[in-house]
Image (cartoon, rainbow, N blue to C red; front, side):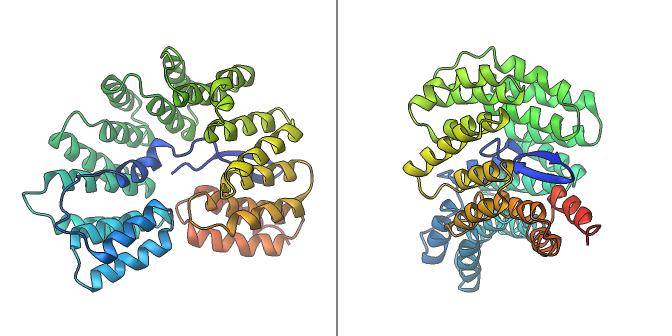
Length: 367
């Protein structure tokens, strides 16, 4: 899941959350809430509790429950499926892939919908593990089952872009867009892949196309704001957010905080993140935003206080950014030993995050 944009300052990397969930990391969220996927013969205690924990972003708790479900002989397909989701939520993609493959191995010919569901999770894991050939193969298997699915075409395109097959990637992206021409998230996530491969100029074309979609809902206006934010057109982004901010739509408020940060208007940024917390005291994103404000104002101790409050909240979603910025805060304090220790733990927790590996390499050069 790219979890945020990355800004480097004097050797430091600050993670700023931009997308609630980029398409390449959002499959777990989209499919997790799917109902009627098939394969679940009867409600069972550990499985049901595990899925409830996954939905609450308590991925470690969910992992434990699904492992108990397996041990106690509950439905193998749903137990291993849930375990795979819980491990994905912890960015343990190799283990998640193994669990998902075990779930697939326990399906039968009467469960094609369940197999398709599991293959979409597998796509995410393979992409995160940089198994681009495997990702393409799984995507093609999904397309052979149902060529109206958007997710496999997106992933095939993303994998081919990573392999520098630009024309084939564009063809797959364009076909995905043709299936859902008014899906703002799809355009944004295609852009994200181009940005990750240092070809944001090509990705801009998709953002410009998306701006031609007439926004109808609060979320649509928010997504238009995201597009302008990506294009660094902050005045237009703020204008697009007028409606969702007036309605106190939390993602829009968070994005408005990022716009203030980009403008170096830290007082308004802090006021916006504080407004979010007044409505939702469990917003890790708001605590992360306040921490960023503190660091920009040369107050790493204040940032660490906000980070500690965010990390004390239940659930795993949103904590990765906090853990990363905790490293940055200690680095700003010139406490390189603590930053290095925190970074080692971070890399163990999120082994596929290239930013963590780069940060550890940098910290290893500091005394």
